[in-house]
Length: 65
Length: 396
Image (cartoon, rainbow over all chains, first blue to last red; front, side, top):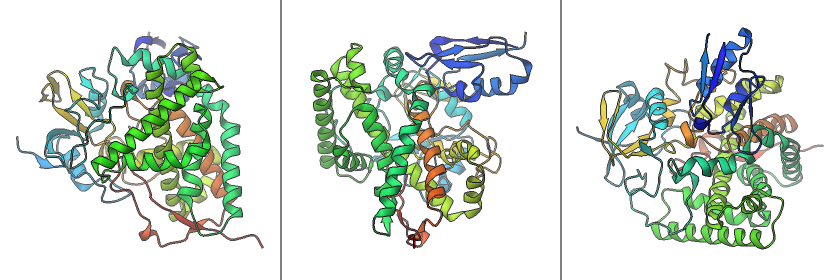
């Protein structure tokens, strides 16, 4: 599983951090998403997909490759 | 296409109006007539609302003359000056939002937890030491978010009566236009003086930091207006509605008290269930847009029936039932897209602390009037409760 972020779309809502705090974080200065783990373990798929679904800016893409 | 008059006032605290549900279940894109006689589209399905709210061809600018109004009359513009974030579209909106988002990250909000807990405990102490019955709205629901946002912005809490009264007047659709204009002007003037004060004597607060970062004073005035207003009625009404619901449904209260770790999810469910800022996601099309087979023309108003979408049984099974452990966070109570609530994580934290503290510390808390006499804000832009008289067993 691979995660792609589009920072320009991020609105800093923090929904991804709430859903998957081991994978996503927020920059202190402007709240923009930071990827802690670009290739998370398959066990985290559920929470990562929740994060992608909740993201109000549709900034998270989850790839299987 | 013929239009039908939109039901604006709520008819039941615990469900969207039947008209909105019918619209949602019949395609979800409906031609409606607003109370002022203007025409608009009403969207009531989750998928349509998500599509619209993430489409840059829909403007959030409430100063646009086509933006839908839910009042029967026209209110002249208040002439406040600066532009609020909720009125901005791309490309103006993105940089402006990023300039303030650092103050509302999950980490920053989490740092406030001990102080919010202290505020909640002090308000409960004061309430328990006072006479009863007491109006929970004035003694507790309003002061919690009010104290928190005043501290964040560096606003003297002694001014809280001013805000609480003016904010309530502003969001009430029955406020006469001239009074509305006076109220808005008084709020703008207050914000301008507040920001001037911060320029002269900066403090350790959000507004002073914005000025120090080079923000234009008129933008900081608009930001102060938005944050103070948004920080009052919203969380306060969720506190009152949540407490009422828990008092009226002891099985939910028992579950909440048994496992405080479930409270964050209970908060999400209460947010979904009440969807207090129902029409806040409304927009104006700036271009012709095709949405699920319907063409919305440039300049047409689009009304968001957010509560109906949040009660969609296709998205939330048995949506009309409150299920505190539902675990669904994909509601639209905070909106969606680039304007999704900036203070959502602050609101979540305040509500979690309140529900985990008030009913644990005051287990005998009860309504002091019959439930059917509780006055709901059917007439307000932000749904909630006017007064919630409560009592408890005094210590022997």
